[in-house]
Amino acid sequence: MLSRRLFDTYDEINVIPASISTRSFDSTPVKANDLMSVMTPNIKRNLFPGDDDDSGLGMDDHISCTHSLKKSAKRQRLEDDSSRCSKHPKVCTDIKAVVTKLEENDDFIADGSRLHTLPTVTGKHSDLKSITSQTLAGVVNGDYDDVISDYRIIDCRYPYEFEGGHIRGAENMYLHETILTLLRQPTKDKEVVIFHCEFSSERGPKMLRFLRSKDRELNKENYPSLNFPEIYLLDGGYKAFFNEQPDLCDPVSYRPMFHSDHSEDLRRFRVKSKSWTAGEKRRYAKKSMRF
Image (cartoon, rainbow, N blue to C red; front, top):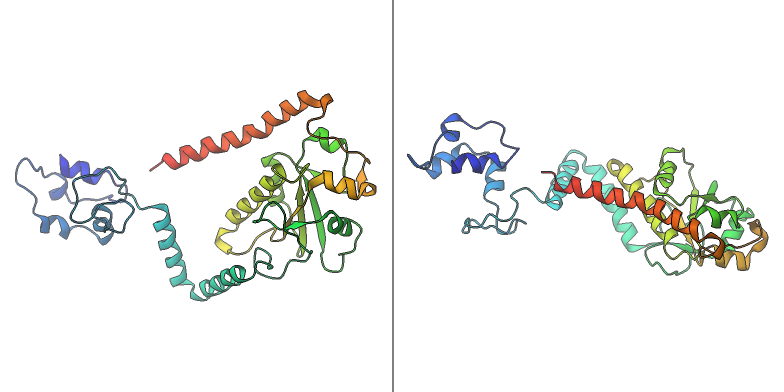
């Protein structure tokens, strides 16, 4: 029956009066007023969206039902935000103030609590804060100990590159799952994290953005709080640092990704690093298909 099929498309409608659910349009037609009288506002809105809804169906055009009648994710987020703001108006006011602050001055760190500690430069990636090799050398040598509590250098190159020479004190993290372990570790106030790869062109920036994305996800109920609000990208990567600060490299050498002796290692580590990304895409696709 058309009425049953229409209602069965929605999980929201758990209970429908028997008088409505058992009627058939083949017998006595259901009057519009009778039908509308048992609908909640949510049901009415979902079945007959306004012209501005994402479904594309207006009240005067109910012929085509090719678009999904479910609320769009964007609309749901807006409603959730509105609900939270109605319950916690002061919190929402504070969040809006932080967002405005970040929009007006990008010198603030990502949680809006203070300005960036380290001097930055305009790098290849405009959405990321970059520092020079000289600045990182100052961090390693303790020149910024009076303004930062600790630092971590995340080297996103493959292990054979890392073993062939890396910045003193750096940690080798080239897999996404390894980056996630950072979020399970205790953090310190005024701790900075510096990412890089060989040139800081692809691997380093990707891992930096990945950490920030997962950090936001982890702290979504406490926006704009973050575990790591102050993150930098080393401009020019390890190659530039090695050329300028070789004494701070251990060992004092530089092994490029396309080294002739490590072609097999390159293939193996590339497959390993990309397998996680492919798995994540499949899981995301399955999740997106659920209703």
